[in-house]
Length: 337
Image (cartoon, rainbow, N blue to C red; front, side):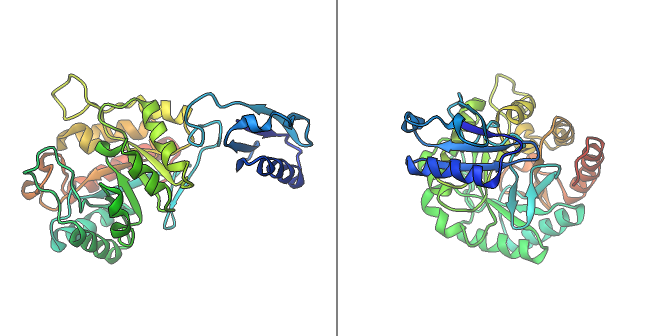
């Protein structure tokens, strides 16, 4: 349930409402927007059976949230949330650009990639140290050594580091080296992992599962947020359909649906959606035009020699060209990059 306060409510009115919630063993999530102040009720609202909140000073109305995801709901924060990653903002009018190799392979490779994406204009460096692969015989990543290389490359070029963690016991290992955790598609419903990253304050990039609905995706975000970490960014990376021309099918319609239903920022991964470098530009431009808050794109200094997902990685030069076109679309729709 949310409590919508009147436009002329006072600070004391809001504090009184929150005090009543706490007296009844409930939490409160305060959202102060330019138009309305909203108090989200966290917990079992039946505990308020003896209280008529709508009679309290400053209260306009109480509205139930019908969806299973409460904190991730647009009702909770009508103006939308933003996520601060080490001073870089994801959401609002800012377009977030994340780029880097699929996997960390060597220090030389990461330094070249970081230099390329920085020169293009990106502010985030991605790189996988742990690689969950379909085949047990595929390259699985260089693990903690990769985390150290990622951090070194990011610091060398003033970038924020984003990396995937594949299990809850890797959180303390990865946390010192990254600015943002990534939860991959295969782990979208790894509920223990979701809860554990929720207990950290580290921002989380949550990818949509390969065959999950939008509601299931938002419920997964709720697992993280219910543990106190509201720094969640959603990532649409394509879903599995009957089509074989691309690796996955990018669900562009998920962008406006999420923006309508959820307060969380949403970015798009055109690399995993396409699976082919030739299609990444078109999907990127479509995603930005549809309202995505950013893009995460795979960039490798020498894609032909990449140890994983070689076909979908751009060269730094190709990424720089794409970046310029993305900037033009972003500016046309009132976004800054």
